[in-house]
Image (cartoon, rainbow, N blue to C red):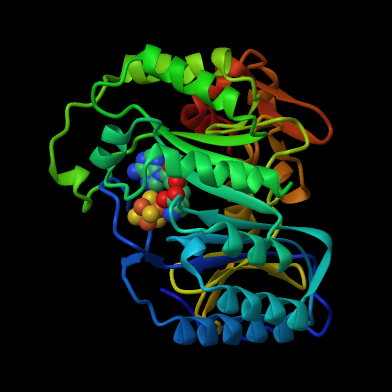
Amino acid sequence: MFSRGTMTGTMKAAPHNIYIHVPFCMSKCNYCAFYSQACATPDWDGFTRKICTEIKYWGEKMMAPNVPTVFFGGGTPSLMPVKTFEKIMSAIRQYFYLIPNAEITLESNPGTLSQTKLNDLVQLGVNRLSTGVQRLNDEQLQFLGRKHTVADAYRLLESAQNMGIRVSADLIYGIPNDTVNDVIQMCHAVNQMGITHCSLYELTIEPNTPFGKMNLDMPDNETMAQMYLTIADNLNLPRYEVSNYATPGHECRHNQNVWDGMPYIGIGTGAAGRILQDGQWYEQMGNNEIFTPISNKARATEQIITGMRTKRGCQLTEHVKNVINSDWIKSNPQHVQINDERVWATDAGMLILDELITKMVL
Ligand SMILES: C[S@@+](CC[C@H](N)C(=O)[O-])C[C@H]1O[C@@H](n2cnc3c(N)ncnc32)[C@H](O)[C@@H]1O
Ligand code: SF4
């Protein structure tokens, strides 16, 4: 249940990250439950107007806060026409203060970005490309419902790398018939790609997807756990979050900020944000005027849940300090560590993260 907001702030808000949701795909993949429509000819003009209206609304309400990161997620943001991207970036620059060297990430599908289009998008500000490689075998890509080949993925990675922007690849492991050895081979192939960031996700079977209705023969839990452990041993990039790996300094700043509890605005249908205004947190949805105050305790708990998934752990803000059980934490050093600034899970703690979080929150 959402309440209609009455934001009363008269001061420029604290820095906020911006997430923009692009809810269109060429077709739906068999595993995916993200909010997006398969649509050959989306109404890009209508989409652009809606996004720019929301940007104007929040920028004016919050008196043009600083923006350290913008993340275009989806759906398939790489389907956006260059003109759409240009108008959205221009609205962000008009209504917010985009800091110098702000990180601007675009999620992309191989086969949807020509060299020319990528070049135009980079000229307009994209400095980080996240690419859905998913698998390195064409038959498996087909099984997942992907519309591109492995060669398409390599071409896109290479184009982006040649442009000197930061590049990340998404991959999925734990599909039917996967073995630990397959995951090792996948890690070695990622090492060869020369990228400095990748996300390796265990396949989740989501209800209301084609896979959700197929009764697939999935690897058992023990094999999945072995696959997860083997990634750390075989990938050259260190893990910095449960599913994310990067050369130090090349982490996704947007996600790091969000996981660390910094406020962010969700723009577009299907996007959610957490806004901070005059010391009050709000849950915010893309539709501009709807937002709900959140208690400090609820917000601190969210920060613990996302922060503890990262290697550096959760920042000890005053609100977080108020909801954690320090005595329990100090008496379980094999699973969780704490200093004056942060609390974090050890490698052993990472394996029982959900249980750990339940015990460390009062
Ligand atoms: C927002 S999605 C899509 C980005 C882009 N449209 C693409 O497909 O490459 C981000 C990533 O989530 C991962 N993903 C989505 N659904 C998943 C699932 N059910 N299990 C595991 N990973 C999933 C995929 O690796 C995907 O690249
Ligand atoms: S994985 Fe990407 S391309 Fe496939 S349906 Fe989900 S958002 Fe669309």
